[in-house]
Image (cartoon, rainbow, N blue to C red; front, side, top):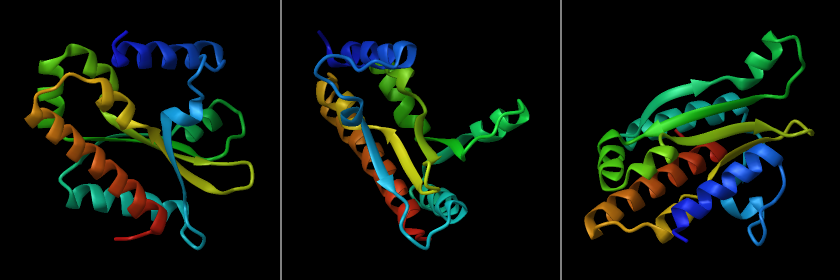
Length: 161
């Protein structure tokens, strides 16, 4: 089974049943980094935005999920999704295989845990890249996007500008 299809099925199972798929613990499908002590969640977000801009990654959407939950009358810990994109690489990926559209744009979640600790979490891009059939040039570009996303997360966790 092609890795893209397997990953999509796995994610669908997690989203619809919250049960782990056999042999693929959900922890293995994500990259998760703790925000360093002394770095506020607001500083982490600002650092991610600045680093993304430096790397020419576009911030195409922000989803303030916890604010939406609060607007519905429920208490919520901070949870926000930041969507970053390299539009030209995204276009090339979808042109190579329309199934890549399901992974766009790339998302980094800011999540506050039960102790008030901030975390940055995203889908592990290596899971998609490992099994993808891409030209050498497109694989290089996709790998650069992966590296940029990891750098954006790292800047956020350290509060680097």
